Amino acid sequence: MVEFVIVSTLERSIKSTFIIMLVLLTRKTLNVKSIKWADIILWSILFIYLLFPFSILIQIEGLEKYVILQYLLKPFVLISIYIKMFVQEVGYILSNLNQLMVTSILLIYTGVQVTKRNKALRNSVRIELDSRIEELVNSFRLKRRVQIYINDSIKVPITYGVICPKIIIQSQVLEDNSLLKYVIIHEMIHIKKFDIVLTHIKNLIACLHWYNPFILVASRYMEDDLELLCDKLVIQRVGDTIKNRKEYCLSMLRLVELKEIQEKSVLKLHPTKERMIIMKKWKRGLSGICTLILMIALSMTVFADIGVNENNPVIEKGDFFQEEVLEDDMVRAITEEEYEQLTLEEIPPIELNSANIDDNATLEGLAHKSYKFNMASWTQPNHNGFTVKISNASSYGGVMYNIIINQNGNTIYNRACYGDATLTVNAQNNSRYEVVILNASTNSLKYRAKINSYMR
Image (cartoon, rainbow, N blue to C red; front, side, top):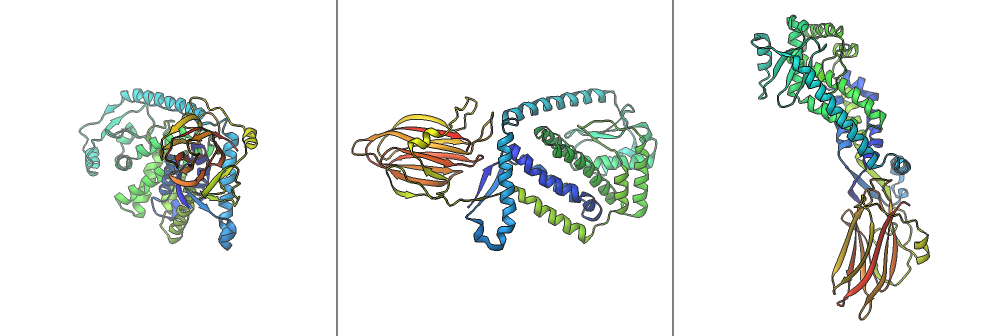
């Protein structure tokens, strides 16, 4: 069975480390031997995964049925199990509420830094009537109006703004025709590709996943790869010849002596030795393209989660008949004594979506009532189990009703019964659930329903 399930931010953050390690291990090879966009494609997959809250859950019936394939599936199953165990252990420290609080503080800090940046840039002087600059800017034929400013208090060229982009350069750049040409082309390519948007997304992800040091490291390398891609596009635009590559590197070398500023909300031109070496050696080859295809394929595996259905039989306790159990390993009937031994937690008011239901209801003949909830928790680890207890059931002429349990819109349990019933469900902590009580008789039905989530 294949379905989409919601994955917690913490679980995605942990699994994203796999993509980060793949990129870091191959980024130099890809930058030198693969297509221009190679590393940015992989970083984009990482960003999509971290921002996309869903995962594809693949439920399989016993690994032994898959012969040789089981040896490939086992590592994925074990990794998934250990990640979920780790999430449960650190869930109290990194609960959704704690993550949100720290993320909010970081976003406020980022906003303050952007405000300070804007204030510092007010001293910039706009450059007008410079034919060299106008010719370069107009050659890109952008609908957005790009403005060029000069500010010597900022030590390196920078670009900021999305709708009304601005480029800040220095006097040294303006006085050197060759350097001015490459700086303007470089920054205009950033503007054309909306790289500042990608930079803002990168900063947002860093704020959301502040507790994962690998994502912070990835943020730094992604910024370098964005600049490398821009370097290659500059050479492509002016003509990919040895002469132009050398001239571009020499122009960038003049900027190395300029002191960098630590500004994360702009795109700054900060040439490094690594970038110059790559520009000298870069040549697309078959090995680089094959490496990229392999890395894409491996990276996409994080979007899937493999689960193995256990073959535990359904234990019948109570007055049941005509059962249809679609996932009999997930739901089982328990006795009153077993129910009393469970540690069912009181859910705080903030946990509006968790199962904490105690309802006395009356259903007319053939009517039904639905109870919807999920396993997400804001102040503690996500829950992975819940109980359904139907008691005090009464109806003129005899009790007859169905208990139907849906998981993410799919029916996993459907059973009819004559009397009281108590069930425990091995739930998935990222799934949505619906418990439906269906009156199967034409007479009214009275009952009490208690549904409580808990951690197994």
